[in-house]
Length: 115
Figure 1 (spheres, one colour):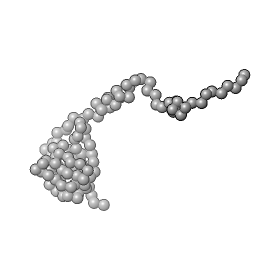
Figure 2 (cartoon, helix red, strand yellow):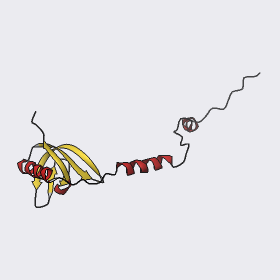
Figure 3 (cartoon, one colour):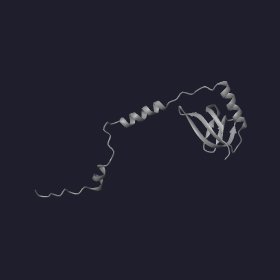
């Protein structure tokens, strides 16, 4: 048998061999939609004791304090560690260095110990 050489592939054709393959069209998008549905969380109501503790902690905060805040946003609870810039009761927000959070969305806030 004669050894026949195959024509050389272009780099684009060679790269196609290693591209990801979706066996079922639209499956990836459907999985992402389902994952978003599963991450949906209803807002929880604070007990009177928890609300009182939250108000006490908010009253003790000062600019420059490091805090661990759990708050409700986009149908889920998020927890961030950040530094307080200022609390604006008139606007109903707490301003952290990286974000503004409405006071009504805060579920818990903990003052982090200074290192």
